[in-house]
Length: 272
Image (tube, rainbow, N blue to C red; front, side, top):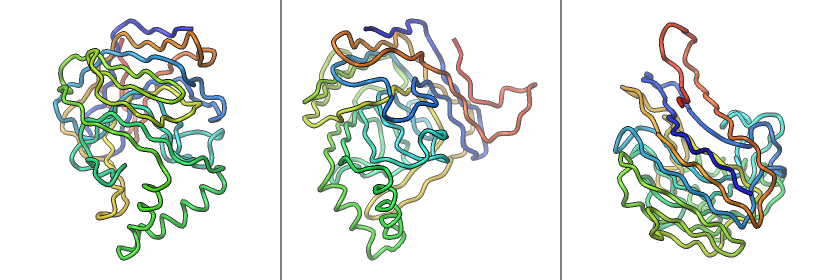
């Protein structure tokens, strides 16, 4: 089975003084996590470039389990509780962010990342997460949750040398026991412990920053953006001919806390 969006698309967020904006494509809107479409084996390909070499906020594409509850990405009533994060994606975070997925890994920049967290029922994870959040707010104790995370999770990541503002082809080959990340046909990361799935496909650009590190604790917010920023995409393709699940259409989603004004282009956009 193959899902193919061959046309060129542009995801755009407008200039904003600091309110959250997100332009996003995904194929799991309103689904419970257990019904997300994708499992290994599959191959994902996309050509992409950003409007800026170092945009403010985050952007990326790949697969995840949308682990946050309502209020983080508007997951909807089918995903009220948070869940241990599972990701296979190319992920960019601007220098305002400091996300320490591994002790030695970078906290921001353009990276290939595979993350498999331990399998914990969502209600139990919610209770554990609440306790961990309390520790993160205490400078003397906030290293403890990270030590537990590093010991119980499988993380593989590698920096991407390709410039964000130039066209490149990105790929993820996801097998049950290995995930391979490619840029222009060259392997940049082999992850020996990928998530099992099911995961959803997501492609996005936003103006969010996030800090989650032993040194700086935990916080997040929205960065002011002085001009429109965009992520261009073409040839989005998922080939799951030997696995996966029935295809759901990729859904454009724009979210913003900006006021409505139909006479001005102040909202996140998906252009074809």
